[in-house]
Amino acid sequence: MTDRTILNAAELQGWRKSSYSNSEGGSCVEVLDGHPAGVPVRDSKALHGPALVFSAACWSPFVAALRSHDLKS
Image 1 (tube, one colour):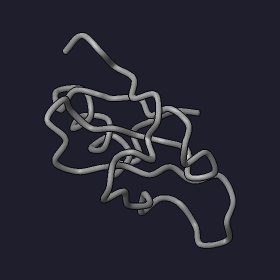
Image 2 (cartoon, one colour):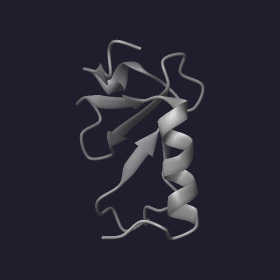
Image 3 (tube, one colour):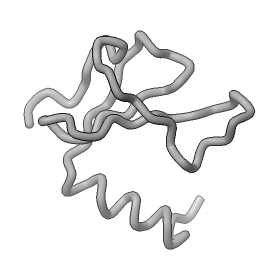
């Protein structure tokens, strides 16, 4: 994968809010499943802004670490 940014994330359909985001409208991230280049991630407050695309090989361990509370702040 050479391009790791989608400049206008609003062009893609099917975004879902991260289960780690709250419903209060604060800082939220959205992800898009099934994209051929990997896993796009965007800021829910910047719908027309860019999305970063992570490879599945990077995304899966990251999510596993979140679920197991292995990430340090």
